[in-house]
Every structure is written in C-alpha cells, then in structure tokens.
Image (tube, rainbow, N blue to C red; front, side, top):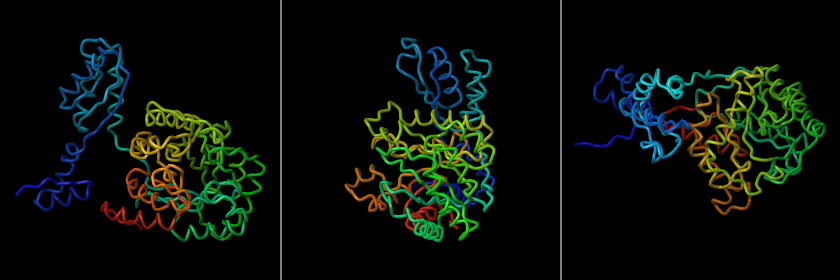
Length: 399
C-alpha cells in the first residue's frame, strides 16, 4: 500500500514520524528538506543572473530568469529562486566572492534563512498581548456619524462604551477606536473634533475595564498623543507616518504602531487604482515605512504592518494581497488585516448590506489563521468561533 501524505504542520510530521517508530530527532533533519522556499530578487544584469542560476543549480535548487538571459539579449532580469533552505544556504555560500553584487546577495540570502525571532508576547501597560495561540482579534469601534458600516451607531459615549465591553467579552484582544471615517470618498476630520469624540469613550472604557487594551485609529499625532494620555496603548495609522510627528511619538511612548498601505487618500483612493505588481508595491512601501519608524526609535517588535485591504485597491488586488499575506512576514513584523464588511466582499457575493457580509469575511479569517497576527473585524463573536475551529484544524489549541 502507498499513499501520498498531506502534511501541513509540524504536528502532522511528528505524528507520522512517530507512527513509523522514527527517532524524534529526525524532524530537525527532515525540516530542512521538507520546506520549499521561493524567493524573488533583482533586478540583475544578465551576466550576474547567469552566475546566480548556475550557483542555484549546483546547490540543487533553481533560478528562474527572463528569456534571453543566457545569451544576454536582455539587459537585466529579476530572478525567482526555488529550493529547500539547504539548497538556498549552499547557493549563498557559493555566491561569496562573485562579482556584480552577488556576494552581498549571498549574505542577504543567509539572513532570509534565519527564523523570524519575534517575541511571543507584547508587554503593554494594561496587560500582555500573546500571539502564542493564533491570531488576535481587534474589534472595530467607529465613533463616527458616517462610517460605511456602522456610522452613527456608536456616536453616543454610552453606546460606544457598551459596545466595547461587549466585544471584549466576546474575545477581542484589542478594541480599535476611530473618530474619523476613512471610507472611500470621505473627508478629513479636524484633530480637535476627533479628540472631542474619543476621550469620553476611552476614559469610560478604561474605568469599566482597566486591563482592556485599546487602539486609536488615526493618522494625526496630535490625536494619537491625546488618546495615549487617556489610556490607549496602540496606534493604528492608516497613512503609515504621513504625519511627521507620528513615528517620534510612538518611539517616545514605546507604543505599538500599525503601519498600513493606502494608495491615495480616502477622498480619491478608489478612483481607478492601478498596480503592475500589487504585492511587490505594497511590500516595498511597507519596507520603507518600517525603516522610517525604526530610524525614529520604534523597535521592530512594536511595528505591525497592514496591506490595506480596500484602501486604493481593486477586487483582484485585494484577493492577491490576502493570498500572499504571508510574504509580509519577511519584514520581521507582526501582520494585521482588516477586510471586515468591505465592498470587495459585496462584489464577490452580491451582498449590498455591509453588515450582512460577515459570513464571507469569516472565510478570510479561517484561511488567514497562519499568516495574520491580528484580524480587525466588526463581528468579534463570529470571528472568534471561526478562528477557534480553524486553529483546531491546524492542530493548535486556541485559548
């Protein structure tokens, strides 16, 4: 009897090794052979790409380059590198001393092979955020009159505080409070108006639940500073440091900050957005903003990145970014996604009512349980149930 195994987790591998009576230590050897890595690098001049390809082939892997590279009828090419970690490591060694910057590429490949060493917990004043049991849920609390899904529902401080308490009871690890709508076509809200809306609600939640971890959804460092003073622990910046005071503020307060990609501004972001390589463009943008935050003194473990689903994206862009969310892990930061009730879900399902799109959104939560660290949603209760089931299927226990 022979069957093809489908081993999607370390737990599956260990179970199969045990079933044949193998030494448990065999996993450390198997791991380097069971994982296939795919890396994209470049551009390289054609002669450099030829050397790179030969180094990869001799190591047991491969490098896919443009047609015309071998006879140098193309000037330059990007390269897709394919191999196990062992293959990549051997190729990196063989690139040492090569010209055209390939020696430096070898060093970068060795860095890419290192495991991401992010701490499993993030210590904050109200309490710790633990990533050990799968994605955390960030509950959306819009205290605005005009948000696309729940505008006006929680503009009253009493109702907003009750909704926050409800979400915390349903399993939200963070409540993200926003006083400015960023729906397509929306206009900016002055900082003083945002602060007036936010402070009574933040203070009220902190009085009711002193250990609650709150985030403020704003691109204004003035608003963020006032919210932090009132008891907020995180900043969710949808414009990724467009305010020059935001990075220094996050550094001086030691608070986590979410950096999100948006093409354009809310007023015009959905006016025919276009990308030639959406995953590459978003990655490059976030890489730049992470470097900017670090240069200001924000530590890497307190930087989170968000691809900005629905913010200046077409339907196909949103789907591509969600499928390839795991690529953002290479930035060495925790990842956040916020897809909840957005119009692309309506385009997929035909559902015009944003509040009725949660069922479609739950599919994303289930599929993203291995690539997202924080999932930002309106329906906390439903998302918690979906993640509990998804983690169980992945062989992990959610607590």
